[in-house]
Length: 98
Image (cartoon, rainbow, N blue to C red; front, side, top):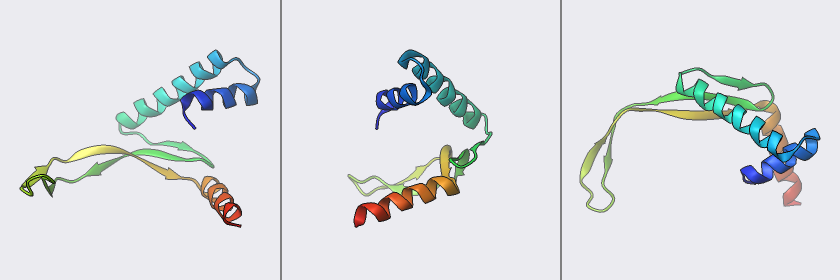
């Protein structure tokens, strides 16, 4: 599912226009990105948690030449799925295998 499809589902489920659903989704995503960029966590109970995580400096290899190089430390976004989300996904996979 891409953003357009998600907007269509949200508009239908909420009984609003696609334009309003797109505006709401963009606002929510923007708020999540902004909060995590500032170093805050965003917890959506039953869905999951978005948070920043630090990666230490490490040594990697250039895949073409094999020469070792240093990969700088960085901060990356992380998502941890909530219990209800995990349960919904594992139930669907178990059902699909049958």
